[in-house]
Length: 355
Image (cartoon, rainbow, N blue to C red; front, side):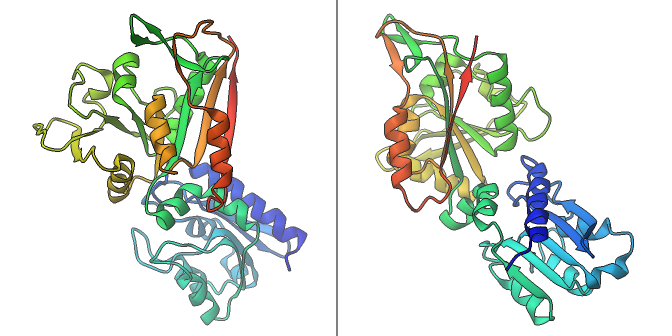
């Protein structure tokens, strides 16, 4: 059904698409390659939210537009057929009389969902859908989760010692311990640039006093989120700085005056807090979320079967005593992930931290 050239070109499309990671959300990652007589005559990808789509950039890069009616256009996601921030890409392909279009994934976004494919076929364009479909879904796992499950794609991330602790205990209180190194910290900042939001619990905010910003890479700054049921956290904490927005989830009936770059959302702590948080973020158009700690918060998300990906930094450091805060149980969590057959692309990886 597909030639070797088709396969090679779609792999190139995937490579181009991923260049938009952290820059186009909540839009999907899309790349496009145009081929005529077995030669690439145009390429493009979606570079920035609100900017031209991949197909537009690819067509613009073709010097001789007369070749387009003899060309095959490769794209990883169905061309849009609706007017959003930009005109419909499907109409542009029809306008240029593209001969053949090869697509990896149908777009499950309600305003598209087959309409782009139908429009192309109505105008006599040869359309093939499904080349490397699973890989295409993996690349756009955030986008598909958001539109199909009506919630953000959730990444659980933490750093732990070799004996499975994320913090030590002293005088009954958790204390921060040095687990990460400069390389793992850089990775953490890269992850933040690529996602829409990052969340911690009350205890983690108090002990670690994290900034939750991406300071080592240019690009997106994730929405900072903290769970603060009784609004007891000090406003001197870094995550309450005015430079970037912070969202605070707190108990109902605890009013809080508006503050610069801070939003307070009341939720019912007697009900399922995970569902309430994810519903709120979905309504705010937050496509992906890193849950960075602590153990209790991460396990709460797992209990509700809302974690899609694990990212763990594992250090050679040993806490060497039993007085510590245990990290989430990797074995049980990954087993649970594998048993959730509705999840098509579970991801789990451990990054070793060498001091």
